[in-house]
Structures are given as C-alpha cells and as structure tokens.
Length: 77
Image 1 (cartoon, rainbow, N blue to C red):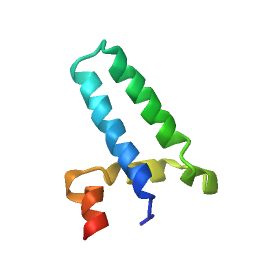
Image 2 (image 1 turned 30 degrees about the horizontal axis):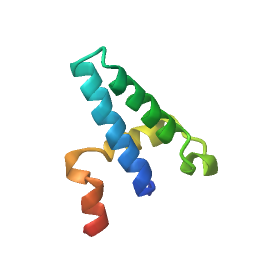
Image 3 (image 1 turned 90 degrees about the horizontal axis):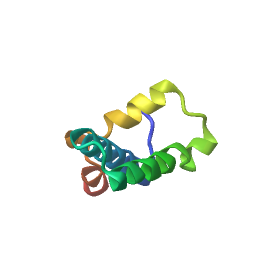
Image 4 (image 1 turned 180 degrees about the horizontal axis):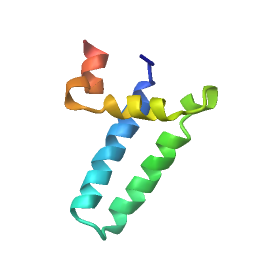
C-alpha cells in the first residue's frame, strides 16, 4: 500500500465532497470553481512529480477517502 501525503489525501477528500455537492445542485458557479481548484491541487500535487500516476494509484487514493480511513484518524491514531 502506498503512503500518500496527508495534504493530497485531504485535497482528494475535499474534491469528492465538492463533486457530490455540485452533482446535488448543478449550476452553482462557486462550486464549479472550487472543484476546478481542487482538481488542479490533486492532479499537480508534488507527490506526482516523483512518480507518474497510474490508474491503480488513483483508485488507491480514492479508496482512502472513506469515513473508516479518515485522514484525521491516521494522524492521531
């Protein structure tokens, strides 16, 4: 299992939340802008400069965003 930086995991979690929010109420300009900012933060994160992202890395990163693996629990536990 890869060890992703905590800020990358948080950005992915925020991206997913923003995506769900936009899907629930499309047409919100600020939500679209936030999603674009978060997309850039995740995709261009310095972690990916060391290793090219492959589909399995993206799947693993998204799997970490579940409530059972909340990044706060990984930081304190």
